[in-house]
Length: 562
Ligand SMILES: Nc1ncnc2c1ncn2[C@@H]1O[C@H](COP(=O)(O)OP(=O)(O)OP(=O)(O)O)[C@@H](O)[C@H]1O
Ligand SMILES: [Mg+2]
Image (cartoon, rainbow, N blue to C red; front, top):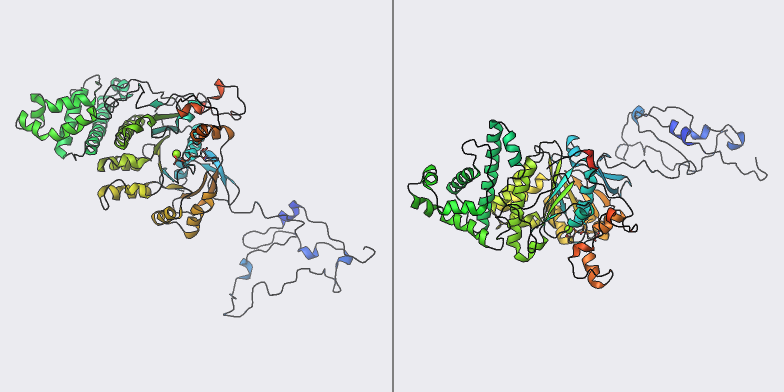
């Protein structure tokens, strides 16, 4: 006891002792006497031999035991256990906060601002764990909020887990710096680029063809012909002509004859759109008879409109881009591949939409063919542009989303707002109703900052709670890379994407602005992509490349192919 009769505070219990005092869930105490009996020092006790309590209860812990006053009979044995400790013993309750339930598997993207824990992304694993029903993702956000950066960080970090990505049409050239940093040459299409992509390219199918059994050849050919026919009818529709079933049959027959697979040939011939147009405009006798027309004249008259629609593609703003043989080799082993369409924008929205459709069809065909078991991620930025071409273009996207699980693909749609999807057709049209349902085919929604008006729209479309909506229009607007992640209908998680210094310099889409305002050295009028720092190997600037970018050669250690 001290001179002034002051009470000495007991030594705080250590963590081991505190933990041993937890009870099991049935409320059965495990060990240790209650706190006020812990110390046997007589000086610590009051007149009745017990220690004085500092925090006296002012009301019974269970409330007043009267019906109608909040009291309920509870099985005493099952009451929730009560733990007591002083602030000297427990400085805070962290980490006893509930975590978000997302497993620590896949790409570590940032952190959950509610629990403080790291946040990981692995859509296929989420499907396997029954957290979502499909691996597709849709990302929404105002321009400049960080959509592309979030996508880039996801694909870069998922590549370390064997997920290979195809950017199916990069309208603004935003993904090109990442490819350059990885030492991959992106395929640029458009004004000034020497690259040509044949919309009817056979890709790796030609090489595989002789090795397949006749049954496999038949099966693959049916798939290829169906895809090409869908593509050509979608392109014709984009020119204002809705093809008929007869047109589809004629196209399929022409394609089959041109590719040379009619009679079980050992080799497939490469074909182009001008060849299809030539056959339609001037059919040989076999063709008009095989497609059950009464005469040459009747064939030509019936197919005039589809022939003209396809001819427009060959002579219009896209002339030369998709109607000549492909003249580049795609690096099939690269972890990320992209088609940069930024050079095409000057040719108008229609040209971009047609290009996206050709690329969508082509990339689906080549990714379908990969039976290496790898998971593919297909990014469709500004997907609504492609779907504006008409019903068939919308149906193509719809079918890709539906098949993602079966084909081991993750489809990632990037949009500004849900009403982008309504712009694909007239109000009440079939296009719009299919497009609206596309959201239901994307189990994971990543919602970056939005204005109040778009917030209302998103809340209605996705069934957000008031709190979730407030997060979008408030918290998410206060910083780039902040998003509400919603997995199916589970409560949204407030996730901050964290970019490394290297990623920030690679993903810097504001760099164009900086160049013009003189913050950065001028690039001498060259395209803005050259402002992006080159890959670490080609520069000694450690301030920019302070963190390593995954080496494509090391990714997954296997030579996976598209
Ligand atoms: N998590 C983040 N941390 C730091 N900076 C970020 C983050 N996310 C984005 N940024 C920066 O914000 C800028 C805009 O990002 P981004 O290009 O990804 O936006 P966006 O939503 O794709 O825009 P747009 O709709 O115009 O394509 C970029 O300079 C990027 O580096
Ligand atoms: Mg973007």
